Length: 387
Image 1 (cartoon, one colour):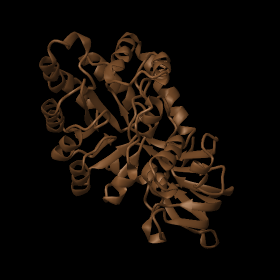
Image 2 (image 1 turned 135 degrees about the horizontal axis):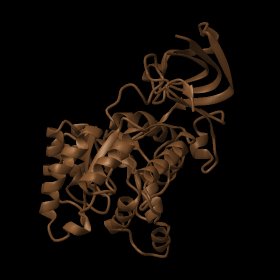
Image 3 (image 1 turned 60 degrees about the horizontal axis):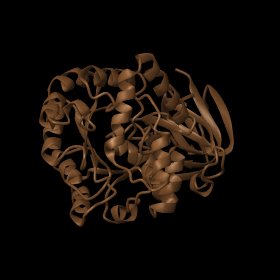
């Protein structure tokens, strides 16, 4: 098993509190990678020998981004919907059905090629782990094939049959919930790790969400929830009640919601590219952080409410619009995302962790927010291999 020594790291973000501060930042550092894992981290001067070495030219190195919320299995385009929002039309969940129609009509090869394109786009922007949801099929066969396609690209697959009620069940939402918790779940579960539900006006209410999440848990899936995106509602409370890993969006929260997140440890997933693309109010990250809530940042890349695959963009938005410090935003985009996925092997650069790291064409992680929109990713390593 060969080892690789990475030197010339001007600034290394480890996310290891043993090194001090939130980010455990080391200067003039080095890393040894062996067997796809981090074998050693420390000062360049103390670095052990390795089978090969590479000098990163005094660049900054950070853990690979962990994008804990995305919808990549789809067909079609909703650029016209975006343009309408930019002229004042408000966002609602109804546009999802447009993508459902296009996705159902698409061949497997078309859907697979689109996921491959978007995952490559993410890799080029420093993302090393991505969660991918279904939710644009909404039939037994289409949800199962969406998850089978997603599983070719990630272990973090989420069954979202409960995205919206499709048109054919408009007069029978209870019948659709029966389908989601029955035959659709049976077909989808073997390809999924997670179960999710969109708890919102125009989607699913609290009782429906509980039934869907409990059924998924009984089938061996862990829970996640789309919560409180368009207004105050029961989503966060349902997530905390069922022991979900994450409540994502969290745009409109009551004090009781914040207290519930803090006391249960459910991660608040914030998705600022959505607010950017829908001209909506941004979540109050400062309120959550000050209450002791664990926060994750993710792209929510999807063709409707926010078609960005860029975690650096989300970091810049979080700092500018959500009152996070650059360090807090980076931690939330790496370690916070790992917490959202209940992963301990990613999101940090410490011995034993997976060697997922991102090299910045910059001297410091601060440049991610300092230079928004600039392509700063020099190289991305996944499991110790440059991609």
